[in-house]
Length: 138
Image (tube, rainbow, N blue to C red; front, side, top):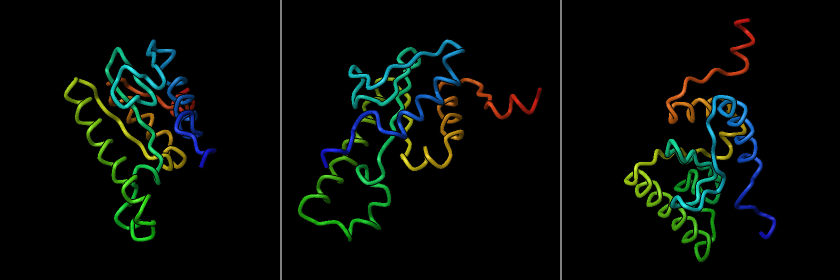
């Protein structure tokens, strides 16, 4: 358990690299683990008030109803339920404060990172051109 990271996970780092490549040249800057925003978003575009979270499937309850039968009731069920409640509360409070909240599952980051970058672009209201698309048009 001590080897499990809460910050700088592989999916999070991969997303940061893609976001930097897509938005840094356009002047968009972000902070990582921004403590001034509730929930300490993994990536925060402070000027645009966009908070991006990359959630681990197990820790944040992906398919919780299906998998909850297999978990030990004494520790894991209350812990994951508390994480899910906290995520909903953080989303609600950030939205009330004017932030746009974008959440992704870690496995979605591995499967389809381009779609995630497009979703972040929509949140930022930026037109996103994938590197593949720019190569095709030349």
